Length: 241
Image (cartoon, rainbow, N blue to C red; front, top):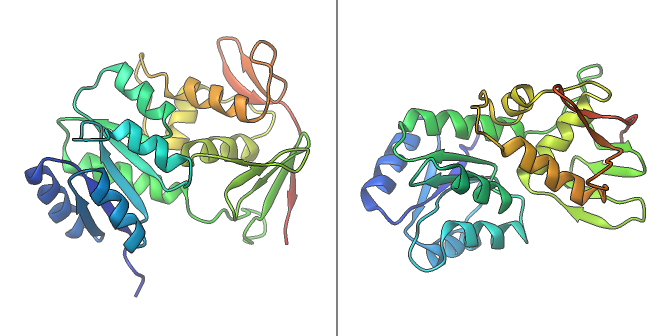
């Protein structure tokens, strides 16, 4: 029998922690809970965690600070819980490296759907033509290592990626020279449609361009198509080991 994915729930509200833990346990996951940052770090040190559900408003270091620190050392997926659905909260969470966000109040089944979506997208990449696991994708002098989940620059420097950045780049590499609009990108990365004020795709692409050393005024790898979306405007080669 497969070992269930282990979810770490970090929230200072005991009722919410217990509610989410019971719900996720009853839906096939194993859960660990923490009320604040120190307990979160202790859980990460002592157990193999597959995903973190992280509240924005916490005593001591808040969720944004914890997410930023985590991103400096790990690509572990994070779903941020925000007390409000304000765009600024969403933007800050994504800029700190969160993979997805969910405004409170929310239905537990909505969180379950987000967890399933994020975990599904971090599974091993499979070549649809051969059925073999892909190892590396090469483009414009860069290499995306699908096993190590990091980027290698043309001068052989390792560039770390957040889980959201990794998935976004992987999607572009799977669809080279094809224009993808925001709705398509959000659906492929997060499994949902965009709302009119959702800037998460633009933020992630801006961060990706920085990692790829692109000129923001004239990007050559991920280009903007006016009234269309974005396109990876280079060829992609698959390398298998």
